[in-house]
Image 1 (cartoon, one colour):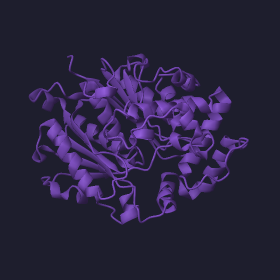
Image 2 (spheres, rainbow, N blue to C red):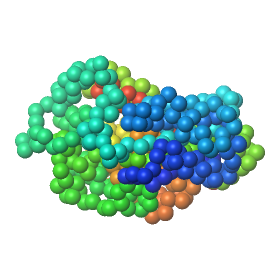
Image 3 (tube, rainbow, N blue to C red):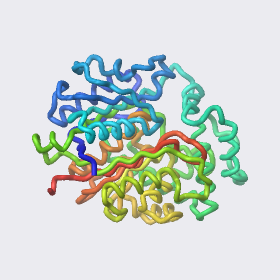
Length: 415
């Protein structure tokens, strides 16, 4: 296991935050995470900062972390800028854990702050920024691969459903391949979205807090078959921060609200065959994290997974071993991943409903799991939650995410 713990964590509300900036959201969550940990700014010895859009939309690049954090009074500590698509802030967590385990610091700060909504920009401009999450020098090759995965257009499917990101087309193609291979149905994918919208009703920071039925999801505007709008994560503003501390610091300042990081594994995508699901990057990260943590899938009490689309959740619960390969759809439809089910997944509402501020998403997931392990999740609380797992992916290479990370957390309240 790692020698790291989450001592404090904070998140902004998520959604269309038109008056907020990358800097002021970062300041809010840093202060919140420090207050949660009972620490001061001067206690921080190193920081990692994640953002993916400010350089593209505002022209602020190279030193985004130093700029966003400069007014907090940090005492000249090293600040490292981390960008790894949607897995950016988890990459920061992974790096902070490595520094703590190497004895380089005892108190680390990881921040993700993302401004994605710019009213003065067109949807096409905003969606174009997503292309950088794949190999733009081989974009035509990528389109050809996903066209082959998608196969024939479904009867009645819309040929032009308006502006949407290249990633939605990728997810749709992978969903169709999974449907042909395993018999997964569009209704089962809709069950994921309906479940997550139901969970988000109880999450005060969620972008959307309205329940939806499976029928509501299926009747929503088609984006790219089999995905409707309610099956796709929205564009979101938001920020999150975590204070990560060493075993030594915890022993010196014990707290029942500290959450142990048992493992954090990160892998990169490969040019595997579409049918080679055992080498899927999320599966490899899950195996590595569970092996390091010394747990089996049956030990997981609650999980947050990267449902940039509802189909993404089906793949990731299979990768985590919460469902057999090809069984993600039936397991979801049976209610096993709903609150009160065998292993609730995305109790926060997931990216679909809670929101997806790209560079902050990884820590936002951890915020939900920390609340669960502390018993502070309110109406979405999983009874007796002790082991929690987050899966966070980002970008695309070949037929899978360019980066994937799996983090295993454990409550120490019962120790």
